[in-house]
Length: 267
Image (spheres, rainbow, N blue to C red):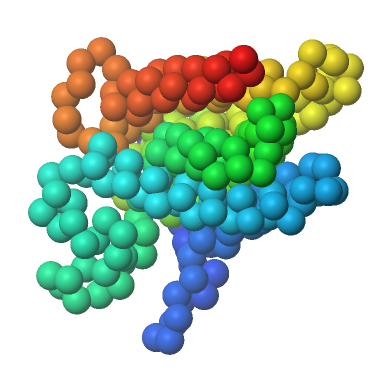
């Protein structure tokens, strides 16, 4: 097969890259996504408690990043990080002596860390319906965050799909020279479509305004999207996990945990 017929993604992953500083486009998109969530959650919450909410979100976002890093290191690359524990939280390769950056964040770990921190720290200043409202807003606007993250994955030529011969497949020369499913594009656009669909329907479907219900809808929908797209992705670990991969097992497990947490908070 003539692979030259496929689009070759050879775009630089860097916004700036010189001897002084290197800034990846992924980092910019991630930061913009986090700010988008933070700004819109605060904007759409009751004015009287916005000061408390800003403090809560700041703590929860930090915990989200840390927990997503820990999950990635110990679920997807345990063999390496179990021997290099300092590199889990310190983005520096001590053996080779260079700054690595946080190359690996787990959305599963980030989600569970964020939910638990909102509940743990939020219960001091917010009642149950208010906590559920915070989670509803955070989950809704996080659809744009994870869309931007997958766009950043595209610039990094990561989260790649399996070998593909269809017209929409892409060659990533920085990884190899064979066409692959653009898994990160498919997944990212799925989240964007879900955001737009909910945004269009939430004014018409009044049950979505019930505290906690929107979170359940989003957790279920994102889990479903992630579970099925994993079938066209390259495995991100060499561990043999049987019928499904680690990401799929984590998706099922953590969606059940988050759903259980949200449901019990409604009682």
